[in-house]
Length: 282
Image (cartoon, rainbow, N blue to C red; front, side, top):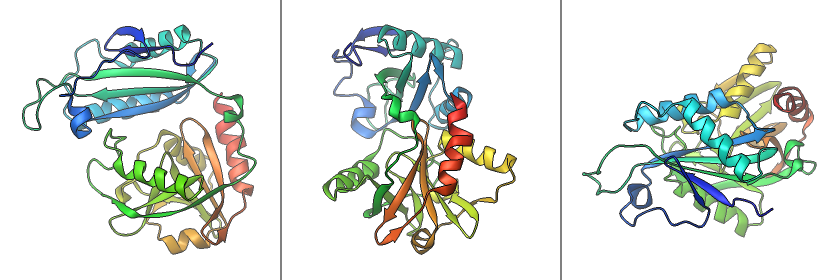
Protein backbone atom coordinates (compact mmCIF):
# COMPACT_ATOMS: atom_id res chain seq x y z
CA UNK A 1 0.00 0.00 0.00
CA UNK A 2 1.50 3.34 -1.03
CA UNK A 3 2.17 5.60 1.95
CA UNK A 4 0.47 8.93 2.42
CA UNK A 5 -2.31 8.42 -0.13
CA UNK A 6 -4.64 10.95 1.48
CA UNK A 7 -4.42 14.07 3.58
CA UNK A 8 -6.83 16.07 5.71
CA UNK A 9 -7.39 19.79 5.13
CA UNK A 10 -9.85 21.88 7.13
CA UNK A 11 -12.30 19.07 7.79
CA UNK A 12 -12.11 17.30 4.42
CA UNK A 13 -10.08 14.39 3.03
CA UNK A 14 -8.22 14.86 -0.25
CA UNK A 15 -5.80 12.87 -2.37
CA UNK A 16 -2.28 13.56 -1.13
CA UNK A 17 -1.26 15.29 -4.36
CA UNK A 18 -4.08 17.87 -4.13
CA UNK A 19 -2.83 21.46 -4.39
CA UNK A 20 -4.34 23.38 -1.48
CA UNK A 21 -2.28 26.47 -0.66
CA UNK A 22 -2.57 29.80 -2.42
CA UNK A 23 0.52 31.83 -3.46
CA UNK A 24 -0.80 34.50 -1.07
CA UNK A 25 -0.81 32.17 1.93
CA UNK A 26 0.85 33.75 4.96
CA UNK A 27 2.49 30.52 6.09
CA UNK A 28 4.03 30.11 2.63
CA UNK A 29 5.11 33.76 2.59
CA UNK A 30 6.14 34.33 6.21
CA UNK A 31 6.13 31.02 8.06
CA UNK A 32 3.00 32.17 9.91
CA UNK A 33 1.96 29.03 11.77
CA UNK A 34 3.27 25.97 13.59
CA UNK A 35 3.08 22.19 13.58
CA UNK A 36 2.97 19.06 15.69
CA UNK A 37 4.71 15.79 14.86
CA UNK A 38 3.16 12.82 16.62
CA UNK A 39 3.57 9.06 16.79
CA UNK A 40 0.69 6.62 16.51
CA UNK A 41 0.87 3.02 17.70
CA UNK A 42 -2.13 0.73 17.21
CA UNK A 43 -4.44 3.69 16.66
CA UNK A 44 -3.24 5.53 19.78
CA UNK A 45 -1.44 8.89 19.67
CA UNK A 46 1.53 8.67 22.01
CA UNK A 47 1.65 11.48 24.62
CA UNK A 48 -1.51 12.92 23.08
CA UNK A 49 -2.32 15.14 26.06
CA UNK A 50 1.09 16.81 25.89
CA UNK A 51 0.80 17.32 22.12
CA UNK A 52 -2.62 18.94 22.28
CA UNK A 53 -1.74 21.06 25.29
CA UNK A 54 1.27 22.42 23.39
CA UNK A 55 -0.81 22.90 20.25
CA UNK A 56 -3.51 24.96 21.94
CA UNK A 57 -0.93 26.97 23.89
CA UNK A 58 0.76 27.86 20.59
CA UNK A 59 -2.61 28.62 19.03
CA UNK A 60 -3.28 31.25 21.67
CA UNK A 61 0.26 32.63 21.67
CA UNK A 62 0.18 33.16 17.90
CA UNK A 63 -3.24 34.87 18.09
CA UNK A 64 -5.31 32.38 16.12
CA UNK A 65 -9.09 32.49 16.63
CA UNK A 66 -10.45 28.97 16.94
CA UNK A 67 -14.07 28.09 16.20
CA UNK A 68 -16.04 26.29 18.93
CA UNK A 69 -15.67 22.86 17.32
CA UNK A 70 -11.87 23.15 17.11
CA UNK A 71 -10.91 21.02 20.11
CA UNK A 72 -8.45 18.25 20.98
CA UNK A 73 -11.19 15.67 20.44
CA UNK A 74 -11.98 17.09 16.99
CA UNK A 75 -8.33 16.94 15.92
CA UNK A 76 -7.82 13.50 17.46
CA UNK A 77 -10.80 12.16 15.51
CA UNK A 78 -9.53 13.63 12.23
CA UNK A 79 -6.08 12.13 12.79
CA UNK A 80 -7.49 8.69 13.60
CA UNK A 81 -9.77 8.71 10.55
CA UNK A 82 -6.95 9.77 8.21
CA UNK A 83 -4.53 7.18 9.60
CA UNK A 84 -7.18 4.49 9.15
CA UNK A 85 -7.88 5.58 5.57
CA UNK A 86 -4.15 5.49 4.78
CA UNK A 87 -3.71 2.08 6.50
CA UNK A 88 -1.21 3.68 8.89
CA UNK A 89 -2.91 3.06 12.24
CA UNK A 90 -0.50 0.31 13.36
CA UNK A 91 2.64 2.48 13.41
CA UNK A 92 2.75 5.96 11.93
CA UNK A 93 4.22 9.43 12.00
CA UNK A 94 1.57 12.14 12.01
CA UNK A 95 2.18 15.76 11.04
CA UNK A 96 -0.45 18.34 11.93
CA UNK A 97 0.24 21.82 10.59
CA UNK A 98 -1.65 24.96 11.64
CA UNK A 99 -1.40 28.05 9.46
CA UNK A 100 -3.04 31.39 8.82
CA UNK A 101 -4.66 31.93 5.43
CA UNK A 102 -4.10 34.57 2.76
CA UNK A 103 -3.06 38.16 3.30
CA UNK A 104 -0.18 40.59 3.50
CA UNK A 105 2.07 41.06 6.51
CA UNK A 106 -0.23 43.66 8.13
CA UNK A 107 -3.58 42.54 6.77
CA UNK A 108 -4.42 38.85 7.15
CA UNK A 109 -7.86 37.97 5.82
CA UNK A 110 -8.68 36.26 9.13
CA UNK A 111 -7.14 34.32 12.01
CA UNK A 112 -8.80 30.96 11.39
CA UNK A 113 -6.50 28.01 12.21
CA UNK A 114 -6.27 26.31 8.84
CA UNK A 115 -5.10 22.77 9.48
CA UNK A 116 -3.39 20.14 7.36
CA UNK A 117 -2.86 16.56 8.57
CA UNK A 118 -0.60 13.98 6.94
CA UNK A 119 0.43 10.46 7.96
CA UNK A 120 3.31 8.20 7.02
CA UNK A 121 3.98 4.58 7.86
CA UNK A 122 6.91 4.02 10.22
CA UNK A 123 9.41 1.17 10.13
CA UNK A 124 9.18 -1.03 13.28
CA UNK A 125 12.90 -0.30 13.87
CA UNK A 126 11.71 3.15 14.94
CA UNK A 127 10.68 1.60 18.27
CA UNK A 128 14.18 0.32 19.00
CA UNK A 129 17.13 2.27 20.40
CA UNK A 130 19.64 2.96 17.64
CA UNK A 131 22.38 0.31 17.63
CA UNK A 132 24.95 2.58 16.06
CA UNK A 133 25.36 5.91 17.81
CA UNK A 134 24.75 9.11 15.89
CA UNK A 135 27.62 11.21 14.59
CA UNK A 136 26.90 14.92 14.97
CA UNK A 137 28.61 18.27 15.14
CA UNK A 138 27.79 21.89 15.99
CA UNK A 139 26.35 24.09 13.23
CA UNK A 140 27.79 27.59 13.61
CA UNK A 141 26.23 29.49 10.70
CA UNK A 142 22.96 30.32 12.50
CA UNK A 143 21.86 31.33 15.98
CA UNK A 144 18.47 30.66 17.55
CA UNK A 145 16.74 33.53 19.30
CA UNK A 146 15.74 33.31 22.96
CA UNK A 147 12.33 34.98 23.08
CA UNK A 148 8.64 34.33 23.70
CA UNK A 149 8.31 32.40 20.42
CA UNK A 150 11.52 30.36 20.29
CA UNK A 151 9.96 27.32 22.01
CA UNK A 152 7.18 27.08 19.35
CA UNK A 153 7.46 24.49 16.55
CA UNK A 154 7.14 27.27 14.02
CA UNK A 155 6.61 26.87 10.28
CA UNK A 156 9.56 29.26 9.97
CA UNK A 157 12.19 26.50 10.11
CA UNK A 158 15.09 28.17 8.31
CA UNK A 159 17.86 27.64 10.90
CA UNK A 160 17.01 23.97 11.25
CA UNK A 161 16.66 23.50 7.48
CA UNK A 162 20.10 24.99 6.84
CA UNK A 163 21.61 22.94 9.67
CA UNK A 164 20.13 19.77 8.17
CA UNK A 165 21.55 20.58 4.72
CA UNK A 166 24.94 21.22 6.32
CA UNK A 167 24.80 17.94 8.24
CA UNK A 168 23.97 15.99 5.10
CA UNK A 169 26.79 17.66 3.19
CA UNK A 170 29.21 16.79 6.01
CA UNK A 171 27.85 13.20 6.14
CA UNK A 172 26.62 13.66 9.70
CA UNK A 173 23.49 12.15 11.23
CA UNK A 174 22.37 15.46 12.74
CA UNK A 175 23.51 18.96 13.65
CA UNK A 176 23.36 20.81 16.96
CA UNK A 177 22.32 24.45 17.02
CA UNK A 178 23.49 27.37 19.14
CA UNK A 179 21.54 30.28 20.57
CA UNK A 180 22.48 33.96 20.41
CA UNK A 181 24.72 33.45 23.47
CA UNK A 182 26.68 30.66 21.72
CA UNK A 183 25.17 28.00 24.00
CA UNK A 184 23.63 24.69 22.93
CA UNK A 185 19.88 24.78 22.18
CA UNK A 186 18.76 21.63 20.37
CA UNK A 187 19.22 19.55 17.20
CA UNK A 188 17.44 19.84 13.85
CA UNK A 189 14.49 17.66 14.84
CA UNK A 190 15.10 16.88 18.50
CA UNK A 191 15.92 18.15 21.96
CA UNK A 192 19.30 17.32 23.45
CA UNK A 193 20.32 15.87 26.82
CA UNK A 194 23.83 15.46 28.21
CA UNK A 195 25.07 13.43 31.18
CA UNK A 196 28.07 14.79 33.05
CA UNK A 197 29.27 13.90 36.55
CA UNK A 198 26.13 11.84 37.12
CA UNK A 199 23.75 14.71 36.36
CA UNK A 200 21.36 14.74 33.39
CA UNK A 201 21.09 18.18 31.81
CA UNK A 202 19.01 19.64 28.99
CA UNK A 203 18.84 23.25 27.78
CA UNK A 204 16.18 25.30 29.57
CA UNK A 205 13.31 26.59 27.44
CA UNK A 206 14.69 30.09 28.02
CA UNK A 207 17.74 28.98 26.00
CA UNK A 208 15.72 28.94 22.78
CA UNK A 209 15.03 25.22 22.38
CA UNK A 210 11.75 23.76 21.17
CA UNK A 211 9.36 22.74 23.95
CA UNK A 212 9.45 19.06 23.02
CA UNK A 213 6.83 16.62 24.29
CA UNK A 214 9.35 13.80 24.73
CA UNK A 215 11.63 16.24 26.54
CA UNK A 216 8.75 17.03 28.90
CA UNK A 217 7.97 13.34 29.39
CA UNK A 218 11.59 12.45 30.15
CA UNK A 219 11.98 15.31 32.62
CA UNK A 220 8.86 14.13 34.45
CA UNK A 221 10.10 10.53 34.55
CA UNK A 222 13.58 11.51 35.73
CA UNK A 223 12.16 13.66 38.52
CA UNK A 224 9.82 10.85 39.60
CA UNK A 225 12.75 8.40 39.73
CA UNK A 226 14.83 10.91 41.76
CA UNK A 227 17.50 10.94 39.06
CA UNK A 228 19.49 14.21 39.21
CA UNK A 229 18.32 16.34 36.29
CA UNK A 230 18.61 20.02 35.46
CA UNK A 231 17.22 22.42 32.88
CA UNK A 232 20.30 24.53 32.38
CA UNK A 233 22.59 26.65 30.25
CA UNK A 234 24.92 24.30 28.38
CA UNK A 235 28.14 25.62 26.92
CA UNK A 236 29.68 23.73 23.98
CA UNK A 237 32.68 22.86 26.19
CA UNK A 238 30.40 21.10 28.68
CA UNK A 239 28.77 19.14 25.88
CA UNK A 240 32.15 18.00 24.60
CA UNK A 241 33.19 16.91 28.12
CA UNK A 242 30.02 14.89 28.80
CA UNK A 243 30.05 11.11 29.24
CA UNK A 244 26.77 10.60 27.37
CA UNK A 245 24.70 12.69 24.96
CA UNK A 246 21.33 11.74 23.52
CA UNK A 247 18.52 13.30 21.50
CA UNK A 248 14.79 13.04 22.13
CA UNK A 249 11.67 13.62 20.09
CA UNK A 250 8.09 12.40 19.99
CA UNK A 251 8.59 9.97 17.11
CA UNK A 252 11.75 8.01 17.91
CA UNK A 253 11.88 8.66 21.64
CA UNK A 254 15.63 8.58 22.33
CA UNK A 255 18.62 8.34 19.99
CA UNK A 256 22.09 8.19 21.54
CA UNK A 257 25.02 10.12 20.12
CA UNK A 258 28.36 8.36 19.57
CA UNK A 259 30.45 11.41 18.75
CA UNK A 260 30.44 15.17 18.37
CA UNK A 261 33.59 16.51 16.75
CA UNK A 262 36.49 14.79 18.50
CA UNK A 263 34.46 13.80 21.58
CA UNK A 264 33.14 10.26 21.98
CA UNK A 265 30.28 9.08 24.19
CA UNK A 266 28.80 5.91 25.65
CA UNK A 267 25.11 5.02 25.97
CA UNK A 268 24.66 3.19 29.29
CA UNK A 269 22.07 5.54 30.79
CA UNK A 270 20.52 6.46 27.45
CA UNK A 271 19.76 2.77 26.86
CA UNK A 272 18.29 2.47 30.36
CA UNK A 273 16.12 5.57 29.89
CA UNK A 274 14.89 4.29 26.53
CA UNK A 275 13.89 0.94 28.01
CA UNK A 276 12.30 2.40 31.13
CA UNK A 277 10.65 5.58 29.85
CA UNK A 278 10.12 5.18 26.08
CA UNK A 279 9.27 1.56 25.33
CA UNK A 280 6.64 1.60 28.07
CA UNK A 281 4.66 4.26 26.18
CA UNK A 282 3.50 1.75 23.58
